[in-house]
Length: 284
Image (tube, rainbow, N blue to C red; front, side, top):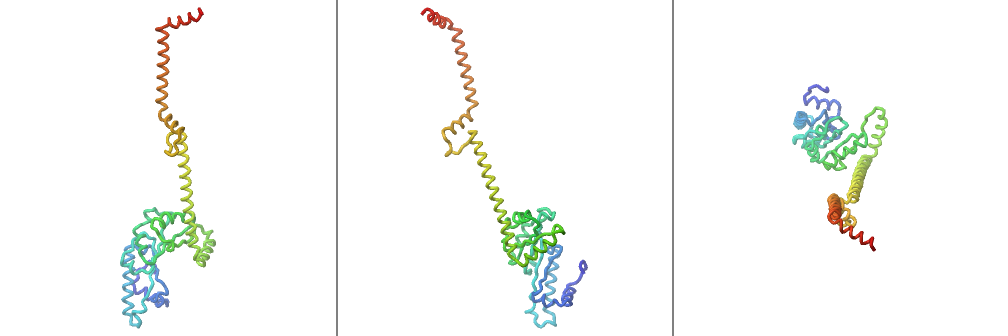
């Protein structure tokens, strides 16, 4: 009956026909609201209206002598975390499973990330974020776009292997089986991702430090700048020379020109003095 309009009673009757109604009532079988996207406004209203109807039906069911004690159904909701869950639904949901879309989904960041909706989910007392991971870049993106900016506790994060190629189906299936048998694997993946992230930060810091030293050495060698503590007499001389070398060159040129001009004038106006000195030398 997918895609068909059915009334609320139809769903209850189907559960009874399948023999699972009592298990749903006592929470042994969970009701999982999924989609499409169940947090779309119209869907949220439909879910809350059904649960209201079901509670009233249960309380008025003549075949159930334990009306008040047996109604303990467990409601989960599957969402991509892009729509804010309203109070009416938020207050009756027992568990929120959020599967945010990563950039490999082809959606834009604005379409994939709704900060208000994510923060609303984290206000619930029972939630988890499930990420489909295909490669190391997905792990980095998970931390960069979600875990770090929203401060999501790692105990509320689940990683699920993605299947990008049908040829990898067997490998992925085996990994999923190992993951189910060894819950610690999720934590190991997250810890490994955190390690990779810290390594990236360390490498970036080292590269920045190396660049800093290179720039400093270039400035120091050029005499442009040096820290006060590192300024020696030589570095100060280099700094002063670099700063005033043009002025010094001009001054030297002017001084040289004046000296030559003065010498020329002396020879021009006082040639007899030089001649007398030369004559006296010869006579001796």
